[in-house]
Length: 324
Length: 280
Image 1 (tube, each protein chain N blue to C red):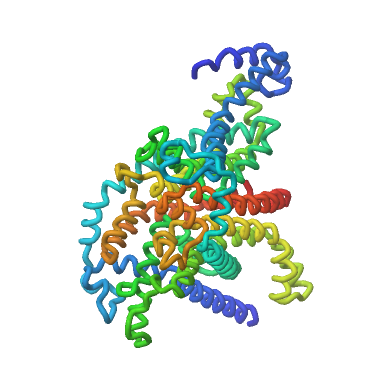
Image 2: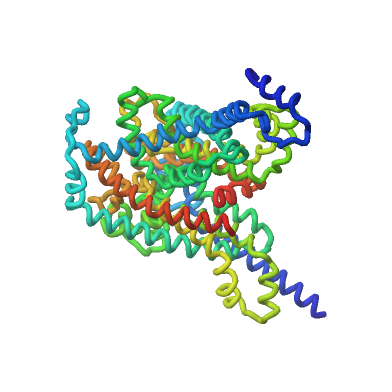
């Protein structure tokens, strides 16, 4: 290792073993400053990285959102400052109410069901029975798969002709012509929600199961001695003790659901006729299909603000979790 | 007599639980089953009515076809995922070490920033990266995608590895300093070997994220020079909407890293991921 000798050797020679153990400790201001500098070198790449790949792009996004959004202006980098025009145009866009409604339905539906089912499964798999560990791991598969793969597999499930759902329904005689799950404006959104739930359940189950494992067994023993029934134990012990974990799970679920992109693009591309257009896919469509980067950046900024509010809640619950 | 009765009761309950568990897993994994079955069918069999829940004449032709047409994309994904994983660790490991074992006044602030980065929607970064990368000629390139894919990995890796490093006994490091170890030397010889489980967990998740990334692959591509698996599948889907056997074979190839990770999770690295990811 180049350049590692001098400081180290001095530390060893100049310092009896009982001295404060940090390198350079007790060696005057100079050595301490050098050590401090060396310590910073470990952190510096990460700080530069965060500045270059998070702070700068976010600032860039804000800049894009207040500049003229015409393609030519952007290509020539001569786009002029237009203030909040892009935001005004985005807010008055006739597509916006639909996008917000879809996003709300998508998020609420996903969060409620994936949390509910995830919690039930977490409780179920907290019992000891043969193969429970293996079965629990198998349930994680949908969450571990790349988004494109999940999207593709579910798109096949709901395919009018090759999909299992239509084939089985027609086998048992329930339908006589294929249901167009993903191209029907009324059915597409529920299917997309269902797809997202499929990914969300394992994630919720995993974290909640972890939380359940951390509950001291003595609490349950005490409850049983006191004659509390199953429901009472659940309400009076499990839920209160789990509250910090529940908060983290819900906040993370909110953030991930708001971000959801891959499966929607693969399943429907936001269609049919914008029936499954969410804030995330709309941001993409505005920027890369309509080539209106100013608009895209404006909607992206709005999304980021929603995320940020949630991030603060995340940090608060995270702190709570740490304090536990 | 009563103990035998209760143990028989316990056996019955655990048998019922096992049955219920099997049903739950079956319901959750039906789509996967259908994906595998379809990948083993011929095109005609894939949409035949009445349907066949088992491939009538199992064939691997879809797989060989996909290897032929998508092999390059698989390789591209592998290069990008390995590159992104290495880049992320290269930045994250020293930073995690610094945040865990040195005292900075900014430690709390940086941890906060790291947490907040995880909430930023990918599409916002995607748009900015597209414009920025266009100026510095990183669109349609391996380095561009490697850098973009590493963005979410670096903060995640730092948080996971730091959480683990904090739990290591600090006395080891202090003893090493007393014995004259340098900052870098102590990281390499003491902290790194002890932190292997957390680094491995972080590496696996970084790999999985970068391997599966679709958003950056989609937004940072204009010419089609660098097409990873996810984007290739998407384009294939656009061109041949109902070639399901081949699409499913491609999906299964793309799922291989997830399967490997699942086996490792089953072997117990889960502890590191679930709790570290949660508690930082």
